[in-house]
Structures are given as structure tokens and as C-alpha cells.
Image (cartoon, rainbow, N blue to C red; front, side, top):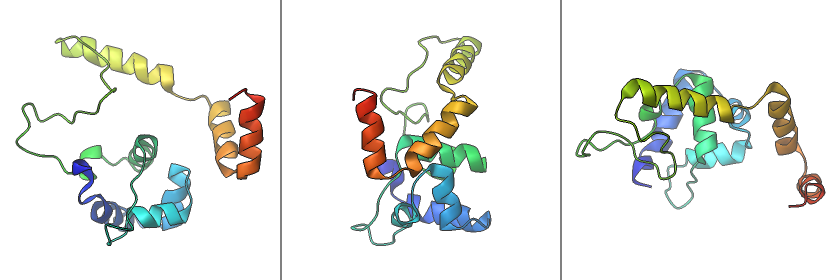
Length: 138
């Protein structure tokens, strides 16, 4: 969690600067207010952290660069944030790598119907979510 040492303070500052409530952030990230409150907790024992999808949802919907939320060390070799499993290109050519990244983003981007389905699933009760997953054979 070294990238998230000051995340709670940074999130709160960005939220307040954007005049967003805890509920606004919760809705953006598809979680409840208590979860967002835990992300901003000053007591590290009570603090929670967002998942990658929640973090990216917040950044995309508020147009906040990821670097504003994360603690980036200056002693890294290339100044890049390394997240396991997120490599998308083996090319040294930046234009090729950017094209591959764009294709990957387009591949995983949800349609409007998928977004609505996910929104409804997240708002459903635990029993209803369990039933849906059983219907899907999971």
C-alpha cells in the first residue's frame, strides 16, 4: 500500500475542492458512503482502500489524474507506476504502444446497457445478487 499512504488526505482534499459529498463519490464509484468514509479515515486501523476499478471510476468521472491520489516515489527507475497485470504493450515505439492501449481500452469499455446492468446489480440486495450469480452458473 505504499502508493496509498496519503490517499485519504488527497481524496478528501480533491472531493472538497470539487464540492462533492461522500454520497457523490460513493455513487461515482458504485459503493456506499460508509466505504468512502473509510477511505478518508484518519485512523489507519479503520482506513479502507478502493479497488482499482473504483479508483479509476473516480479519476475518470472527476477528471483527476491518478498521480494526484497516489504517492509516487522519485527514486523509481523510469518514474512509471508499476501495477502487476496492467502491461498492455511490449513495444518500445510510443505510437504503437498508445494504439495498443487505445484498442485495449475500447475492448474493455462497457456499453450503455452493460453500465446500466452493472449499476442495477450493485444496487441490488445481497440475496438478489446471489440469485443472479446462481443463474449465471457462478
